[in-house]
Image 1 (tube, rainbow, N blue to C red):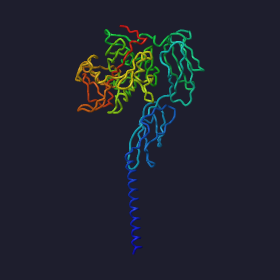
Image 2 (image 1 turned 135 degrees about the vertical axis):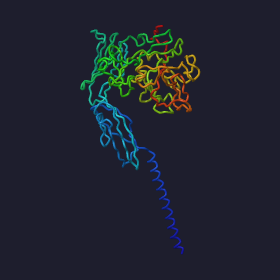
Image 3 (image 1 turned 60 degrees about the vertical axis):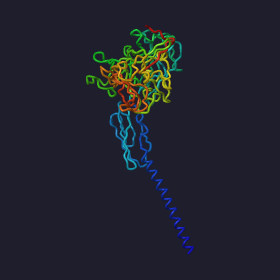
Image 4 (image 1 turned 90 degrees about the horizontal axis):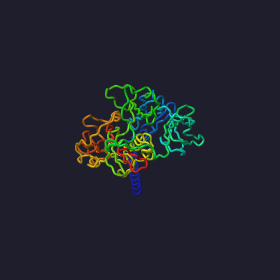
Length: 478
């Protein structure tokens, strides 16, 4: 009897153990299934630049199941084609979208990667447009889309004189300016024949350049720096402008001593007459007009009179603050380590100002970070000493209009009430009308204190800068 009871107890014990193991196994499998369902598979990149005739690229993925099935399609196969395995081959210049469908764990996931294909090119880097006489400067260049390359450098006198205004040591890759004047420095890739040039001014001292600050309208406005503003069209739009060689990154060229900005129609808004006359629109760099916000013996605080361009405040609709914002990066420039780098070619600080001009611009402490270019805060936009109404309500003191370039970049605006423009202050919380992002000034001058969606791309940008009046190269004309 005891033996029978012992056998039953053993069987019961074994049954309990089996049940417990099964429960653990089921829970483990269930947990894995839940985790798999929660993590969406996706490509490791969202966009990529490729070059005609250069390397292919194989798409890579994260959170991909071993038995996942993938399907790829290029929206513009004449620009870049994609194979059944996800290998992208660049074919011609342009943009295409690679659509991706992933089937795994009984679900389908759709996403895309944007591919931009460019022609190979070379670029001069690390040397500004003003250098000092008798000082050695290292020559550097970068190639894009070239598997093999051999670089050489040359310099010519831009002043139509025969003497050697500057010399190059090709062994040490050093440039030295021998006398005052203007030169054109060129780097050439020998195998392909591709080249890039830069106009450079040689001065005695960087801080002895021509007057930088020019007062207008009895000192209430200042002209400082240059930025694309007025569109070139009609008879003024010559074949020389259309056929000039534009910098691949900055989209600029210098023609008859006038700097031109070229914008692709695919990134622009339709002209007012509703007709495209070219694949591009062209704009002249012109002096930026700044309104004097405050002035002391040491400093000028300036706000651009017009909205100069339209940008998003940030890629995220909510949550971004000034120090991490997309717009701060566009104004000042970010390097890969998220530190400020004013030599990034496409940054506003670099496009609008020369090295000599940046030299006299103060670096300000703005909301805990240091910037040369920034936006007004909510409180500053109500500052009576700046000429604004102390109320956030509608006020003509905050009405701002747009340039033709800003209009082309998408800034909204009307002849009667002007444009909307960003402030750097982020709303603490949403209001009935607000969206909880950065604050902005409406057309008509009212401040939206509840904030707008940061991703709105048609708000104007009015940069703020500070000028050091004690800098040695300031010789202001009143």
